[in-house]
Image (cartoon, rainbow, N blue to C red):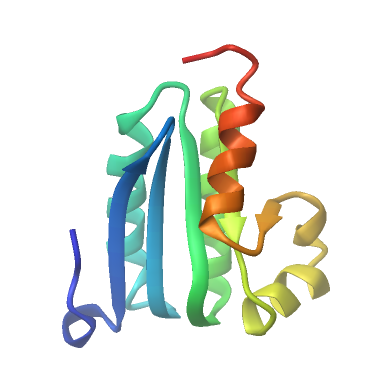
Length: 128
């Protein structure tokens, strides 16, 4: 599903890749985009149990405190459900934000969605 940028300031794509659900977004993750992304993440978390979620932020150009809160809250929810969350981040604003907040030590990060999916698929501990 794609949400037009003119409506929310972001484009969101959701697809199934092997044992994972990938949520890709492009644009700014700010107070206007958080509710839409949260709704998509809620749906994505129900697709696979335990959740194996890849959040592709490679084309995300900005993230405010509400967006960062959504990322941390999603990580907590996924872990509480016995799942795993991987972030795809490019060099830029999001990777710097994770580093300065020390969250880069808490999130599994990858340069591409393919690498994130491969890592979550290979480390599933036999769970389906």
